[in-house]
Length: 504
Image (cartoon, rainbow, N blue to C red; front, side, top):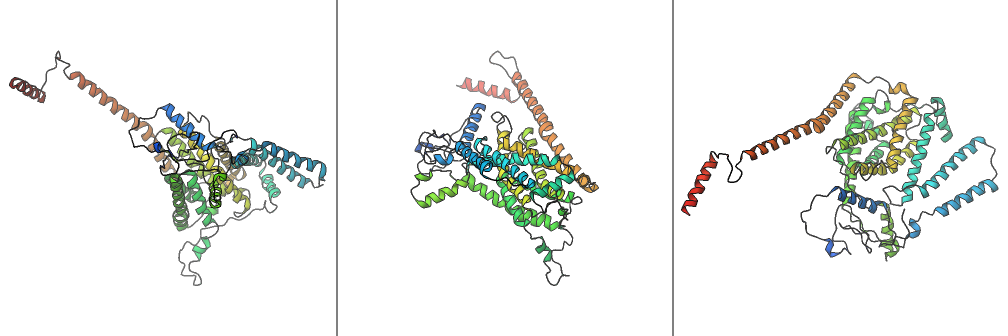
């Protein structure tokens, strides 16, 4: 949270130098010398630079973290950035006093139970929003991300409660949230007739395409657009997109919802919805990485148009960091990238299996709220994972939001396993098992070759080369007293040198 006593200018210029007393500069990996107000000495010619030491890298990471997770108030927005802990405590106390002294308690036990649970959650959210630890994001306000951190805690506790119930009680407990729940619902089958053009239907031969054009088509596009902003890597997004289609092929014997036509898998999903979402996300990432992050206090802007634009840009990042995953650089990063892909796929599968085992229709608002929840917490969790991978010496432990997201994903899967083990344990077709076994063997083989066999081979070749160089140096004559006898071209060179000396 911002300290009110820190006074700095509201203008942040994108340069390669740290901020001074009159400027607030944000390092986003690029330099924009054309921004007005930049000092002339900030534009320098490209000169050879020495490789940074470990201390310099840690110092740069510390500077990067400070510029992104701290907002320096220039004095004009002090009220906006303040935590208002006393104000929130006073309002909360007034509400509790009103409920205790002035409101008559209803005699409905079910209603009182629900209201008590909701009140307890709201009190915890009030505490978390004002007192929880700040994360890596600050826009539009640090309290916004603290709110979603507390929602993560509440959701994980709810999942733990459901996990400890019997299957019948857990499904019937959903009636307390929505009386329409707790009833078994049939799954929709997207397979069946897979003809793109059906000549047998004279009324509408394209009916198969129109039947697939439901609300999930724009949801796929928007979802992959947001996932691209979260992952910030084209290759990882494409791998996750294609791998999930293979998972649908592999698990369609368990959930009828996974049964789709081939063109629905690869054309509508991978190419159209997911592909366009990833393309739009990468274009947005390019704009965010090239955008000069120049922030100015709202009350320092003279025009109303500038004030409105500044308010709109409050919902954009405070600065931008490009993710460079580099999975093949070392074994630790390779295993981390594999873990990220696995958790993404598991969270995607949980979306379908949870609504199947808890009897929730796909269009229910709880399914939508879960997706909104992951949209807000996924970006913070991915940033914390990347920081933990990029500089483990500075980030000695996994971030709080990343820890909660991992715990939530695992708990959701455990609920699925407990509530419907028969569906989970249905035997996988033999050819599907062969394909997955082959894929796992190829990944393990490449891992062994890249990080063990290849490194041993390179070290052996390097040692052999050094040994040959040492042997060659020992064979050469050392000064005038050397005893080594020159041969071949060396003799000819020596004779020609003596002739030149005599002639001179």
